[in-house]
Image (cartoon, rainbow, N blue to C red; front, side):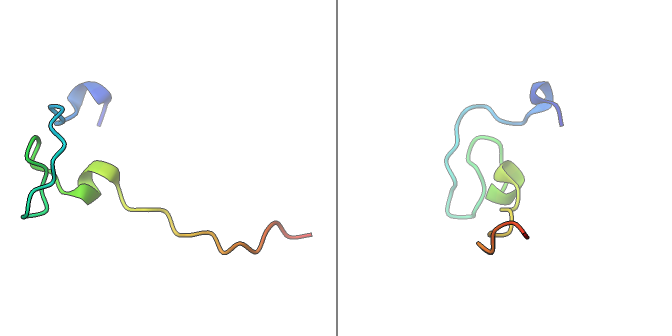
Length: 45
């Protein structure tokens, strides 16, 4: 979805039902799923 097609109307309040009161999307729909945490192993040598 392009920025011009965003459902966001600038009211970012997540209600008790887990949906944004402005656009009606869930937090996962707004922010996406978080990336997996890094293991901290560092680069292979």
